[in-house]
Image (cartoon, rainbow, N blue to C red; front, side):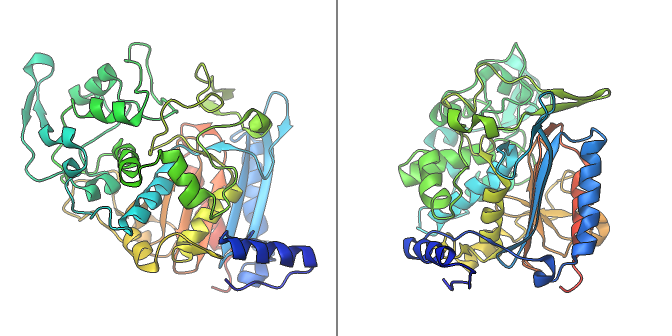
Length: 432
């Protein structure tokens, strides 16, 4: 790791210590101009985001932009708690929901690099209960008709959400109803839960056992269906590593990348930094009631792969900079450049039915802009991204070596935010 010059001896010492321990040093903050951005033009981004808070569209936010391992923009504005007017902070904690998927996907790929599996391996090779999986055809209850798999369900199908697994809250087919009846709700979020639903699984083992009882929504590889695939991947991480998913993430990602505030739980000592979550209503933002007990502040029963992590903008920008850096950040190498290239390549052929993706592709853990012009977005081709249910968002631009993280807590996810962020960030990049 090359140590950048710092202004004081203490900073140099900290960098040297981080290098010696294999931990990535703190990202350096520089002027926007040092990395090709215009400070004046970035003020447009600030004004737009502050306006959303002032207009009551957002409670508060933290936004960060990094390029080539250096932070060129960082802003926080608004409130963690609207009622008490508690100011949001740079180190405020956020439920990142589906942004957990990219983290767990990287963790799985570290095991790929250890020879634990191949992408085309049948999942049933590692989960014997899946050997008898069927595919839904028609009917429900005792009249349900299923058919055999036309091709094996593979690990690659899990990464790309083409497995045939779904979410209990993304539809109302007989398969979705079975998810509710059996309690296939893998994460702490319990999105879309109803009082009539069966209690959720208490462990990944129980989750996988329940899932084996339900037919796939469609044949593996036939369609893109967003769902619990990465929760199955988290279970496999546990089997391949011999460690609980939270322990493996801590050892392999969080500690070496110094993601000090990323976890499945919020300690009592950090509760003051945990931002409230809000529902969007016609009359404004309303505090979203937590589950009882709050799954983030109580010991978690199940730590999933599709959601459940809590993080900060500072931690997640470090994760994205590791990816844009070819699998390394400072002295910490997580993946090889070749594995990162594989991860950010499109793995979903155009022949796959995927109206949700439209002109996007999907790699091993996130979506990819294959045709930005058709999508009407100001990003380079092959920029990859994903979001969380509470309007958190990130993207990684390998062409310009840029990553962006935006954190807030509003549900449902605000559709206009990503386009605003992309336009206002790239209009400020004047020296690519």
